[in-house]
Each structure stands twice: as structure tokens, then as C-alpha cells.
Length: 453
Image 1 (spheres, helix red, strand yellow):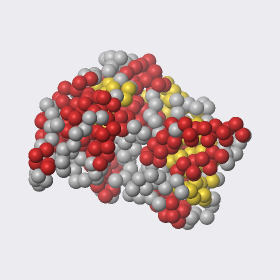
Image 2 (image 1 turned 30 degrees about the vertical axis):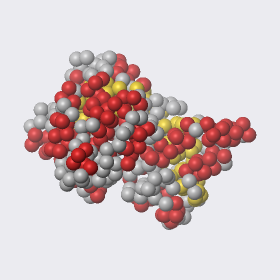
Image 3 (image 1 turned 90 degrees about the vertical axis):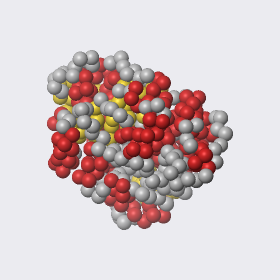
Image 4 (image 1 turned 60 degrees about the horizontal axis):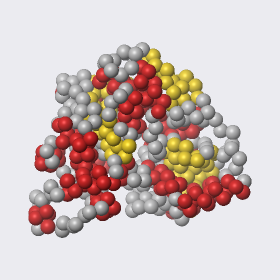
């Protein structure tokens, strides 16, 4: 590996994208050692750490929204991004600039032992894709000096690069389901153990009570650390009513009692994520500085892209990419009023449990029309395989397209009155749709459809 002369954001992004995403992870000690080489930037930060199978990003965004409403400055590190890699780093709700990205990139780049890397010495250290981005976040956030830094894990928790930080204010674990089983284990108990690894002695933990098996793992792990662990479940919130584009519900708290809240989404699973975030902040703050009114305003302004996001009138994209995510997605679709037909655009990564995802979608009976297409990227499942799997379900009317753009355009062009269109299967698919809608050429194509209808 030879050192390159990198001087622009585009060159830095290309370099990071060329790092293999699933190379062998480094040990936690190696990650900590590199943080020390960077000057221990994490020790300057008050860190809220979030892990889990589904809902991590939403919980992070909800925490961020409430803290900002309470007057705190926040930094947020999440993954993956949908369109721009800069989405992974936000400060006070704003993405970092290309210049800030490049500066952090070069800070790390110039700390690498290039002599050892060029000689390909076995011990030569180079961060993986995710590790590099995590180190960049630490550099950027140290300079920005936020009041709170919210970190979302990548895969797992115990061995995740983000778990190398010196100290945490609180650890939060969201809903547990079967995903990344080749890395984390083939039962929810084994996966829960990996997620529980973000718990830290001296810091409280809050977790979603997915089932008795996962709850037992979290309680035992916290007990061995001597740390407090608090469970949150469906008993901690109550649904009130749907409005056209919002959900009214109530979170039951210890310090604030019952707080009526309004979510500006139709995604029913966000009630769970908000209840978890509110409970975590309640434990962290103990009612000293964050008020019930600020929680209400924070929830009202909370938004997380790609989660039942309405990108066009009655066109929704959702990043559900595993069986449990599809379950939550289908609950939301079934709960929404539907005066017309529902259509689905589906694509998925080939390393996901697409058999069960497809089974749930096809078996739901919610979609009168299903369009299939292969996403961009080497990880995407090909359209032939998609068609074969969906074809096992006789009730599905399938349409197969060569790419996502053609499939999405066809659904829009042949749309019936009052028809709802849903796009689901992968966050990469969501990103591809959002990228399409940012292109003037595609926008003009769909505007032409609207003018003709």
C-alpha cells in the first residue's frame, strides 16, 4: 500500500470507499491504542452509546432532537448513510462540511505508519472502513466540543470500534432480532450478549425488553458489572390515535409522569424508539435540566430519514432490512388507512435473511402489486433470485425490472387513484430512491406524469 497525495473531499471519500468494508476487525486493544495515538479525543466527550438490531438510528435521532430542544449542543455519529457519507457526522443537526471531513481524514491518514504499510509488514496497522469513520468522528467532535456525543454502533457492540471509548454516560440497547448472525450468533440470546457488551461499569444502561431471553442476558451482564440496568417495554407507552400523518401517544415516566406526545410519522414502531430514548434521558438527567415540555417539542421535531419517510405524496421508503424490521414495517402498513391499492418495490442484499423477509411480505396480503429490481452494488441480490423466491407465493402479482429506477418509475407512471407505494428491503435501496429524487432529470420525468394525470 503506497501513500497517496490526497487534497480534496472527493479523493478522501474515494480512498475510504476503497477500504474493504468487511475485512478482519482489529482487536479492541488495537483500536484503543490508535485512539491514544490520536490524543484520546474520546476522553473529552460525554458519550451516549446506542446498540441493538433495529431502531438504533431512530433512538439516536430522538435523543439528539430532545437534547437540542433542551439547549444542549450535540454531536451524532450514525451509519450507514443514505446519499452522502457526510450524513454520518452531524453537529447540532447539521452535516459536517466537505472541508471538515477532509481535515479529519488527513489527521488520521497522516498518523498511519506509512513506512510499515508500504513494506506490507504483518503488524502494519490500517483502520477498516468503519474504524476509519469512527476515528474521524472522534476528531471532528473533539474540535466541536458538544455537550453530548451520541454514538451508534456498527455491527454488534462488544467488539464494535465505538466500544473502545474510555467512558460513557449511559448505554442504550434497542430491540433485538436475528441479523448479522454470521458475526453475532444464531439466537437472540447470543446476539443480546454481543449487544450487552456496550454496557460499562459505573454507567447506567437502558434496554428494550424484547423477550425474556434477551432481558435475562442484559440483567445478568449488568449484574456482573455492578451497573444499573433499566428495562423499557410496551407497558411504558400507550397509543392514543392516528391522525392523517401523525401519531398521538403517551409515554409513562417516573419523573414527569405521563407525557402526551405527537410523532410526525405514521411508523408505529417509532413509539417504541421514542419511549426508550425518553427513559434513557430521564435516567441520565433525573429531571434536573430537561423538562416535559422540552421532551414534547423534541419528539414533535424528531425525524429520521428512510424510516417510513414520505418522499412523494403517499410514497413511503423504509429501511427495514431484516425479518424483525419487516415485521415492524408491516404493522405500520396494516395500521394505515388505505382507500386504494398498495404497491411494493422490494430489493435486498444477498447476505440478509431474505427468505423470511419475502415470506412475511408475500404472506401479509397487503400488496396488490409487487415490483422487484436489483439494487446497485456487489452485495445486491439479483432480480432472478428475487423473482424465484417471491414466485413461491401464488397470490403475488410480480413485475421484474432491470434496475431500481425503471421499477420506481413504472410504479409511479401506472399508479391508480389513492394508491399507496412502499419501498422496502434495504437502507441502500432507500438511498438509491432518495438519490433518484435529487436528480433533476428523474424529477422532470415524474413531474411529466403528474401533469398528464
